[in-house]
Image: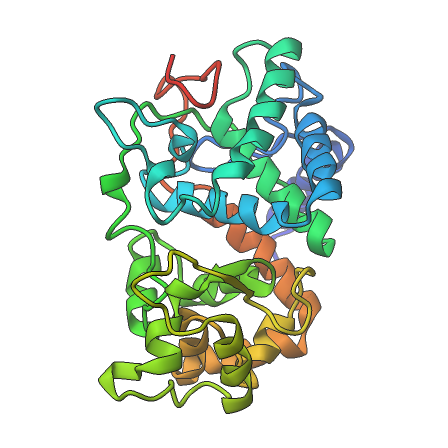
Length: 340
């Protein structure tokens, strides 16, 4: 037996243990490979996350529709040009921006002011420090906490993009008519797994959909048959038809319905129970029951809500890292609506 090698190994173990103890007792800032860090603003703007959280909580008190809107806003931002706050930029005379695409207008328009309010306070406290892209990432997390008690740490350090084009949205955002294969390919293009896709779909536990996003096909003329989608519960379909009548050429009305029929204002696992009851509103929701692998994930998420909650936070962090701008890339906008 080589006692010298044993002593050497013991010494290395003691050093490793000592380093671990020091790390555990120190306020460590964790860094990701892409340059984002938890606690990024700890020194330069220590109240940043608190200020965003207060703005979200204030808005939620007035209208619980804030939560699904801000989570969706972050999702739409990240899937188009990466998480760079480009969804917040206003259109100009020569350019239609992302926010004015039918995917975002009018559904998200009245919620941009929440980001504006947080940014205004932050610019007073810490001028030219906190990016609009980070504010949006914090706001999405805080919305999930307000609506369902979910919590996770958000790595920050994103910079703001300077380009926003509505024409970039087609081909990047998944459509409500997508089937499970189309969804999987769309998420894979953003380096998100099928598990991430099913997990993040749980955000549809809150929020609404316009009838036009599903009604013509799923309720009245599925695949040109003249009948409703057979994958939808008939009684549920009748309740939706009462809210989404066949549109006429003279009507500009586009009503909304809750995406989750069980707990429409609570971010929880009930969305996955709805799917098993054939009560998914969008094709892109109910299609998760059509594949053996995604079906298994749906059942697990509904049975073990605490596991889904943890996975949701991890998937949101992963989504929040899509094509981020860091370092000297991009800018820190002074006004989230206008490039510097």
